[in-house]
Length: 304
Image 1 (cartoon, helix red, strand yellow):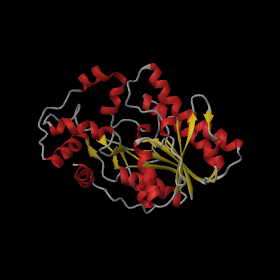
Image 2: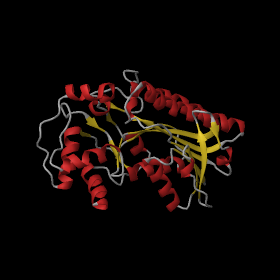
Image 3: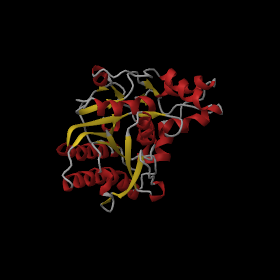
Image 4: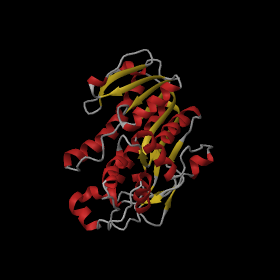
C-alpha cells in the first residue's frame, strides 16, 4: 500500500501518518504550506492550493489509497470570510481531487473521507445512526452536507469509498479537550448551559485505527466515528476534573452569555448529538478506549 493523505498537518492527519509509518506504509501528503514539505523515501510532501485549483499531480505516483481530511478549522470566528473559507476548503479540495483523478485516469483501491457528526440535528433525546434524518438547520449542517455530497463524487475513482463522521476528538495536543484542561486545573472548570448536551467523543488513537481499518477492510458507505459511550457535557467536564483530582463545583455558564459572546458559533458549545457507534461495532471494530475515564487517563498520564 502507498497512502496519500490530505489535511496531513492537522491533529488527525498527523496521528494517522504516524500510525501508518509504524506499519511501514509509505505516505505521500498534500499541504498548502510549502515550508512543511518533506522529501524522503517513506514520507513525501506535495504542494496544493484548492482555492486556486492547484495541485502537484506527482502526489499520486504509485498511490493506491487516499485519506481525505482537508478542511479549514471551524473554531475560528465565523465572519463571512471565514465561513466561506470553512465551506469552500472542504468542497473545493474534494472537487480538485476528483478532477485530478479523472485527468490522470486513476482508480484507487480505497478512499476514506472525513465527515462530521455536526451533520445531525441538535437534540437532547434522539440517538443518531447513519440513516437518521438530515436537515440544514445551522451552518455546521450546511457545511457537512455539502462536504459529504462532494466527497461522494469520488466513488467514480475507487473500488471502495467510505465517509467517517467524526465526533469530538480527544487528544491533549488540540481540540476542545486542550481548551478545557487549563480552567479545570485552576479550579475554574464548569459546564455550559444545562450541561445536558450530549458529547459523542472518540480517542485519537481509536480514530486513527478506524481510518486505517476502513482502508484495509474496504469499507463502503457512511459510518459514525465515535466511541460507544457518549456522555453529557457536565459528565464530560467532571471526568476531566477527576482525571486531575480537581472538583468541578462552579455553576454552569448560562446559554444566554455564550450566545452573546459567540453568536452563531455558540452551536459548537451548545450543540447536542447523541451518536450511535453500533454500525462500526457490527463491522468488528474493537475500541481501545470505549469509556471516557480510561481515554482521559491514557491522554493525561502520557502527557503529564
